[in-house]
Amino acid sequence: MPTPLPNDLQRFTYWQGQLLRSVDFRDQSAIAAQLRWWHNRAVHNAYGIAEGLQVTRNGNTVTVEPGIAYDCFGRELMLSQPQVLTIPADLEDSFLLAQYQEINSSNQQNELSPACLPTKFKLTQRPRLLWKPSNSVKVRDGVILARLINRTTAPSDHPDFIPPRARAIARPRIGSGTTVPGATSWTSWRVSDGSQQIVVGFQVEIDTSSAGFTEIPCYFAWLQGSFWSSPKEQFLFASFGHISKVSVEQLTFNLWLPSIQTWVPSIETNQALDTEFLTFAQQQKLYVSWLGIQPFQKNCDRTEENYESA
Image (cartoon, rainbow, N blue to C red; front, side):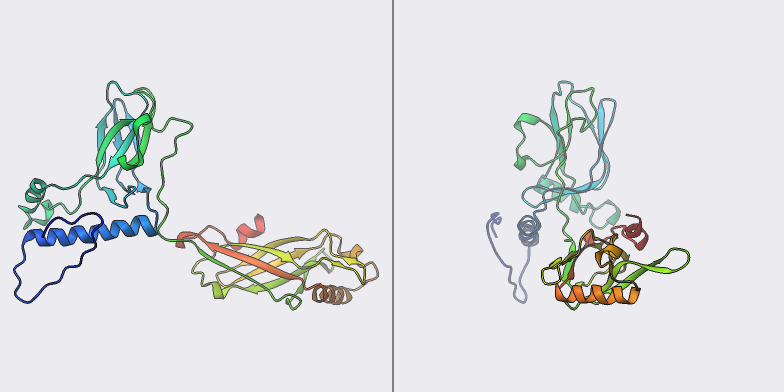
């Protein structure tokens, strides 16, 4: 069959006893690769360096470490071994690019000839690495790995240079929710002053299991509702919220009230203080909103100790 065009959508069908040639398998592989590239650029916007490909300089040469990147067409640029490049003698303000290169027929024959020897068989092809003046580089030319101003500078030694990074294919898991306005299960938050337990605020335990987190996420929480009661002329002021205890399925939101004793001067006991605040919270429909972010399915280094020390 003819070589498929980049915008062709084709599907192979076979029948019993059909004679297949090597070109048929190559065409099928090319179509599968084209669909994968479309997926990479259309769904994941995967342009830039995904992993590795650090560039270091040693005299008149630079070394590119193994890694993977995606060009603007969604094609994979995989470098499995470190590559050493010579810096051109006349180099002035140039970019080091990783560029996709096709495998021609001669390369295919050379690679397939020893196919019975797995240790010598090449499964992937390395991208082409080249220098190009910075004022003539276009996004179609490949992925920029480093920038050299002249032969005496280090790679990427430029205040405005940032290599493009591919957006991770794994998306952060984000969950959010609120407690019930006016029916939030507040409890008193007590601390010891050495002789007795005193109320410094109120707290609520929030169930976050519906978000489906697999690791402790980065939690955010804040108090919402009306802080002013016109009929009773009461006002919840100088309140500070923070998160104390965290887990995959739960967080504790603490509401610190520094002026809790002056808020309702007539209250003398902790029990009366609890009752007064709970009544106020119910009337004003106070509630807590929360947001949890688990970035890229990795541990975000948020533990109970980190929250309490923040």
